[in-house]
Length: 329
Ligand SMILES: NC(=O)c1ccc[n+]([C@@H]2O[C@H](COP(=O)([O-])OP(=O)(O)OC[C@H]3O[C@@H](n4cnc5c(N)ncnc54)[C@H](OP(=O)(O)O)[C@@H]3O)[C@@H](O)[C@H]2O)c1
Image (cartoon, rainbow, N blue to C red; front, side):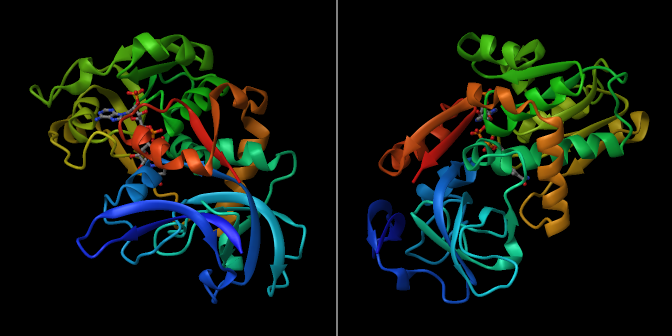
């Protein structure tokens, strides 16, 4: 038996989360590696799953939790043995497969990566999918030729998980970072400490596009918000500027003009962290260990328990969580 959180759907369609003892037989038979979970991370997607939103979970009951880190208990795959420290992200873990919000998880060996040298399990979950995605965003900017000399790089949803890590990552790489936040008063000092040189109130970019081309200001952007704000940012990119489109916390629709693409040659690069190859994940973790200021991680970490998760799942959807929230199992 092990303790875990499950979301269930009642006959009237209501989704609820409950915490209790689960039998080992609850875990998927097809998984080759059983993990004793030490930490899981809380992500925006988990907020959706915990509240039955986003149609991410189709089969109930389900253990949500899109990422976890822990120790191998047993493995039928030669690549892993009992005691190995491993990290699980992506592959719709916690959506179509039981996830990390439990003391045990059972997954496919192909999906795992060994914990990178130099990282603790706790650090790996403060970083988590959010940091892997931030690295993919940075790589997209690099691929499009955006350098430290190109000009200001904007980060939207900056006080959130991917946002905070992106600010810290870009600043550590010497980029001039501007941070957009809906809570400058509360989170401004935090964002400045992470390395943001300019703070942009969300309201400045909240209005949908009115002019297809505005003053060219941003060399690049790591966008966690999408919606009308992304449309505005596209129209404010400098010539050849690039947005790494990561998130949709502000909506799925993209009201935008085609003119910035035609007249300024701007790029929007889509980022997906879920179906990355093993090698891409290993490269991402190695880059994080080598290039990320790991000694700054605790500044953005809030630790919660399994019992606190349902409430935390509501807070992340309301944009009330700052930085990275990790769950200790
Ligand atoms: N593409 C991928 O592979 C991938 C991977 C991970 C995450 N994501 C996506 O990236 C986004 C961020 O994820 P996260 O885990 O970092 O979530 P998070 O911690 O909740 O951060 C999202 C931030 O967006 C801002 N925000 C919230 N609601 C908003 C609204 N209505 N309008 C404008 N801004 C709003 C808030 O920042 P401020 O308070 O500072 O404004 C909030 O903290 C989510 O959409 C998530 O699904 C995508």
